[in-house]
Length: 192
Image (cartoon, rainbow, N blue to C red):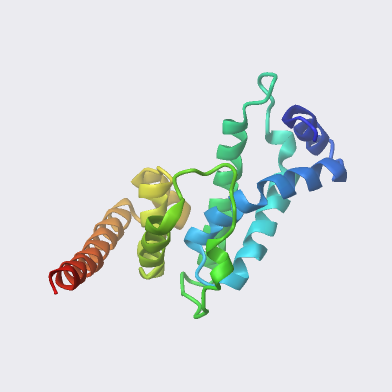
């Protein structure tokens, strides 16, 4: 297996061999990021592929500051591009959800880079976040999960800072209501 430095240098000069290696190595990572934003499961691969096209077109802008390459910085850059590509897709569809079942294999994608998104709790939380209206979900993911500020979210989504804050507040309230209801059901089931 090639080292990261060689892969990135190959991508910078548009060597398809190295682009393929990078794509295969980080596809699942990018997929999971897009998965948080895109409603219709079948559209996620298209968003990820569009994101990788942007990545490969902009490698000249990705500056290698030190050797060996810091994978953390690469992951942050990939994440940013995939998020922007997903938001572009949502905006293109006027943030409207598409109805589509979530296949079981969606939960089985392995990601060697993420440790926090393991287990049943992640699956349940993600299901509830995906139940949010599109604008609320996008703001929730950008702010809570991906660490964007309200100012950055407003610029990215073409909304006001106040709308971003309002959508986050409503998303949190909606999730709290759902989790409280689920918690109450659990207490009731345990007490029987």
